[in-house]
Length: 230
Image (tube, rainbow, N blue to C red; front, side):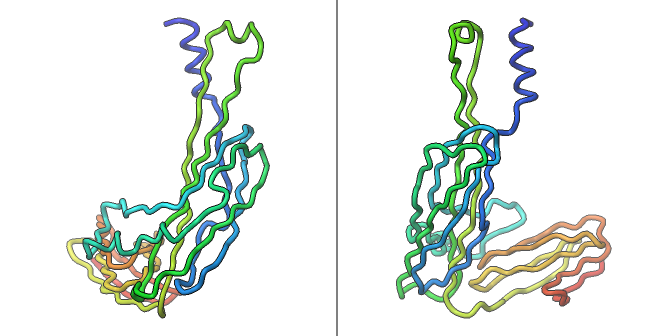
């Protein structure tokens, strides 16, 4: 193989992770009956300038352990059309530079029932590649790469008092949690001392296999909700 190939391969292996982005805050919980404008701060923590695109979107659940109980719930809970972002594009965000983005939420219509709705802000940064500037550089083999590291900030919108309607069950060495309610359910899973967070969206069910686990507990605010001994 040619020397040029090895040079390109070495560059790829040592190339820094461009298009790194800090976002704050990373989550919103809003009142469905109140129109409001929120601020989000973004910062380019890479050593290259980036172009940043921001847009409201909706993402279905992509976890094999989780199923939705209602076939139309994804269409029901999607509120991306009630969100606006300004500016939608930052043409250049320099290294260590910060910008403020405004998120506008328009109150949901009254025919939307009580429950929780959601969407996301999709942040798509693109590292701006350097161009060769002299004849010597231009005469040598070169390439330019753009890096995309997409980020998503969840926007939850609630109408009515939050109420848990959750069923817990252990069978076949697995933990089954069924959220029959219209609000997300949050808890902590402790499996033989190993803890993990559980966020179960409205009208969904999680079946988590626990091979080899002897005891699993479901906790919320240090209170035990359910416990299984296998």
